[in-house]
Image 1 (cartoon, rainbow, N blue to C red):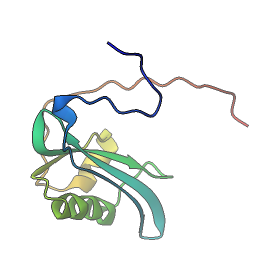
Image 2: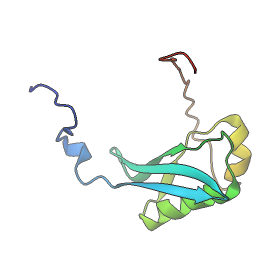
Image 3: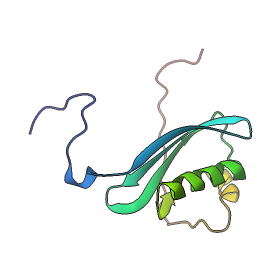
Length: 111
């Protein structure tokens, strides 16, 4: 096994030909960065990664995420959200039963 090289993506069979996309969005005058990554063990399914300056989701932002996923041809999106964000997802999203604890570590003192 060779040494890890920063910036070099390993050539794993499961990672070949995975679809992914990244966009800077502005929805309702709020900026966002969206990243969709196909799940290696579930082709056609994408993990949603979203960065926004506010912790709230708008229905318009959720629709923009769905639209991007559909344009890329994904059949399903995985989206980790807080309890507060569930209401914005709409009735056609389902809970897959997976619960993820989130651990945070502050790296430097706030300014």
